[in-house]
Image 1 (cartoon, one colour):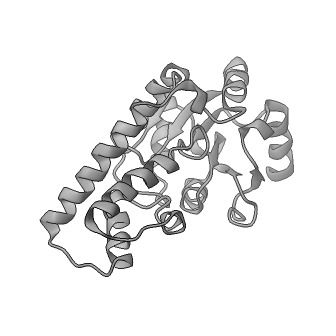
Image 2 (tube, helix red, strand yellow):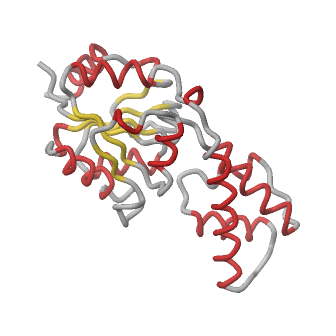
Length: 222
């Protein structure tokens, strides 16, 4: 008997990988304003809000600008990012994702998204899986950023399942902490070294199945 009644997935890095589009949009902005910005610099921006990311970029470039200019730059970056993700296709769904989610749905496990991105519905629609999810908690209906548990608590509420019966799939340290703060079982997606606080770590959803989730639960829940 499986304890988990709902699985909540972070979007970027778990279902799709939009990090490269964030990089392309920031790179376009930094080239425009004359700041040298690399993929290594971009690693510092993962899981960080748009305005906080801009602050890091300005710090890298040793720049100080007016608040109004910051908002202008952030909006420009987002416009370019939306242009990029508007061209996404179903080929960009990460391996194993569809198979695992369909297996969960077949077992009557609710599935939801828990993401900070306001662009979540657009991305899911572009890659053709919007209808697959029972609920979407994202930047459009959640205010507090991870590691605050609000996004996962909201997703649990939306599917009508108590937090203690939810399992979260996350690829970021702040997201792992948010899941733990919500009192949920947390499966890290990525590096066991970076995501060491997760209850269990897999390389990707192609390394996941219903039977494996049951085994993980057996090893963790008493």
